[in-house]
Image (cartoon, rainbow, N blue to C red; front, side, top):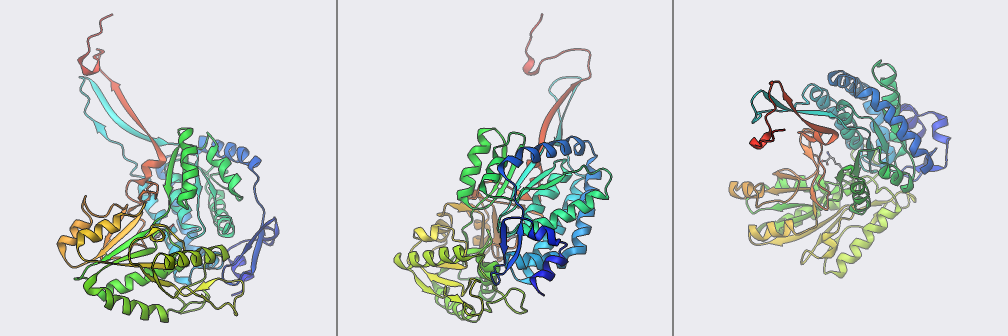
Amino acid sequence: MTHEAVTGAAGLTAEELTGGPLVVSSPIDGNELGRVAVHAEADVAAVVARSQAAFRQWRSVPAPRRGEFVRQLGEALRARKSALAELVSAECGKIRQEGLGEVQEMIDICDFAVGLSRQLYGLTLPSERPGHAMRELWHPMGTCGVITAFNFPVAVWSWNAALAFVCGNPVIWKPSEKTPLTALAVQKIVDEVATGFADAPEHLNQLLIGDAGVGAALVNHRDVPIISATGSTAMGRKVGPVVAGRFGRTILELGGNNGMIVAPSAELDLALRAIVFSAVGTAGQRCTSLRRIIVHEHVYESLLEQLKRVYADLSVGSPLEDGVLVGPLIDRQAFEAMQQALERAREEGGAVTGGERLLADAYPDGYYVRPAIVEMPAQTDVVMTETFAPILYCLKYASFDEALALHNAVPQGLSSCVFTTDVREAETFVSAVGSDCGIANVNIGPSGAEIGGAFGGEKETGGGRESGSDAWKAYMRRQTVTINYSDELPLAQGINFEV
Ligand code: UN1
């Protein structure tokens, strides 16, 4: 399929594809996919004002009815699944299976949010005063600004938007400048569903395409009470304090440095498959990608030998070709960052296998690499740093306590896992003294989380939670209500205050 066919199938018009100065090129071959119009910082105020108008209507639509809107959105995504997935692959370079998986995550979160729309439960609380009733109500919060990264160009928006919509909030979406076409395609789908849905206000979801200045204007705006931002820790360090400074709420999903402990009792063939999927899948460009393995000394040599064999045979190539497991890096900067990290790893005593550029003749403007395995003598600075590329650092351990200490010593805290059949190790890993991450898995790799759980992590990962469980609460404001249905005015804490 040509790039033209892909963008056409995703519903993008010639005008949208030629309308502006932002050049979008495919990481597959560097070919231009389109030139997209951008917003200026000065446009942000009007976008926020339109969003506020949408909020005033949407917050009064009953939540189950808002859920019906999200149900229809999920249906529209089902109908477009393959076309949208193809565009995801063309624009961010992930293989077909993963493009389809990404759109499936959108569908799944819509289904989840539909059920949630009838379950935005508050508590009833016993009042200490006679003739009084206490309860907790959850109200819509207002505009939710959603900043997303190139690597999950549509799914991360959907985790936020599906919840925001059922919670009664409009969304302003600032996608990565590297992936505006998938955002435009999704915006079209939302608009189409909204047009056919009498209760949906105009501007329920708006796009803000532009540079960091546009993002900053959104983050700064006092009428955007929630900013959900996914990206690097460096980005979060800028966004977090600005939003805190105006007492807004952030949901931050920042860097990960996800580890796996491989114990001597582990089923090594399962561990091997999990390592490969999570370390080289999406070319190592997931926030949940496996970046460190901490392997018991008794199984280290044999695991590394098998791993190197599998890595040597990995099919790297165009993500649109059948059988390819590793597509390109997003761009030249990503490739350079990977090479710099490998150089640093060598300086810090690492032994590097792989990591070289591949297919440069076939794709001079596509950055394909052989995923790298780096055996490290210690958990040095480079291992502590998230490099968004397929680099797997390997460390050896002797005791489980030592493995846990190494595991938790990095500044990030997103996802983690242990491969073991020893119940004591498994339970310790998920206990209070085990993994310090937001996600902790046993005999499963760190990536590929289901939408039903709360997604996010601690420390430099930012502390936000999105997607399943009770993550919806971050999109609403809690109101504690006390009602006096007596003919007295008793005060709490038994205070006597006669006037
Ligand atoms: C991301 O990389 O930003 O758990 C999100 C996973 C996916 C989401 C990753 N469900 O790997």
